[in-house]
Length: 423
Image 1: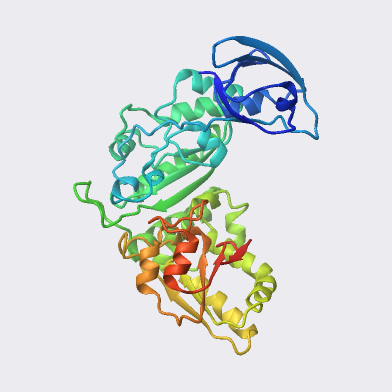
Image 2: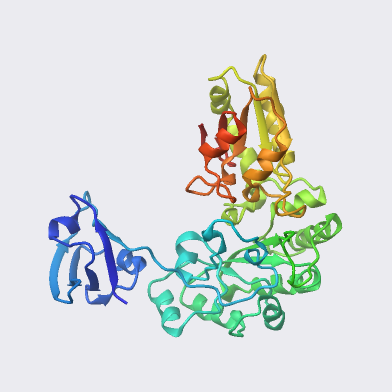
């Protein structure tokens, strides 16, 4: 379908050319424009020949010449992502209770979102023309939710409506120059152990163009009624997985496999040094955040201390179970430099989702409110990942509402120490 224009920025090239909201872009330089990515791809030329259709169906043509100092200024309507057609035995969304934010129940499996936002896709719903488009426009890298290279086992785990072996498709795309970041949700008794070893060896083949492989433990909430019975990782299983990866590092040249931070916390191991993570290719997956957070804190400690000294208040830090080790180091380092100030630290249990969920991004406002153990005079310091990009918790509380309910000032800090904000 042609791309419909939602708005046009004032003083932009499109506004100067007379392009109007609700018009549709039929073609741009002779190419069909289906979505915002097409507009960006074909709209980068110097000369732009538009064919437009008005709401009443009349067509017109116009030409725009790009100017470096002025944006094109066409804002399309929101892109509607492709939905997932799988029924994964470990799907986290299937383990969510009703009544939460509507967006939390969206299951996208869209190659454009994979390229633009780093969302992981299964490749099971790609059409032939989309495969060709990926090659033609070099939509790379793609983030692939693979889980195993054993096609039969993969189908058992993701229960796709369309059975497929993803490796031939990945090779075909790799022949076009497409590269991949792979995610594997590891489920004890399914794709760990020998199966994981085989998968890593398969993905090391140079004709697959795999840049990184992230291993994350299956996340199990307490809302699993009528779902496939699964076992969580414990310390022993986590250690087995880490030893397997260490063997690859020691005895092969395979160095692109990155276990999630949770495995190290469960096993009681220190997270690897910064060199292990190279350029942190799986950081959007949360892998390496503890190491990067610690390294960034060292660089930003002086600036953060300056922020803390702006107020005479005491500070009560909140963290997830997974981040406890790091935050103990942080609070200790800060306490040494803050005279006559009390700094305390509290782990927030995930009573909402259950004992096996240990990351900060899944902490709810309800758990913070019910567990808080700080004097009302303290400022609460909490990670920004408790909130989404619109400033709401998983259970729909805004930062202002949470501050009011807690009756305390808040200092919201990016987990990588790149920014912070008082409320």
